[in-house]
Image 1: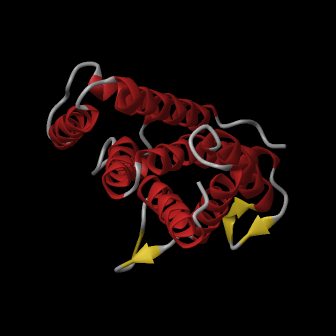
Image 2: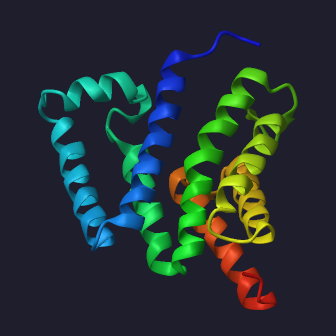
Length: 199
């Protein structure tokens, strides 16, 4: 195992914390979708302004958590997390949407962490490892079971993680994991429920 990348570990911890907070807001706050959409809009504005000006605290946070390649789009990961999650809430039933967001919250960062630090078998491309992908499927299934049946949870996590591993592209650009994972997971669970009546 190589030395653990502390920068990436910080990012993964923040990813999980953002996801947990998002889920709690949806479950317990009135008009949660409106509130989260306003947060997204403010986040987009802050992202734009931070490319032009130094913003106390925000700029320090970006320094701690943002990858250099995202310098022109600071906060990209969190913003796409909100977009993917809000779209899931709009498109799917609440239980499927929440299960999809949990798959995004836990499967994505933990599969990356396990793959990067313990992975040995390359899957599809040199940055993805089968050990990480299977761990992501397992964790995503376990957490999604809080809201949907184990069959739906497994199907959603399985397909979403393999789509994420394949790095789906559109118009020559790779689709961000935070957008792809909840929409793929939600679509698969919705289709299986519609077709087979599995709750």
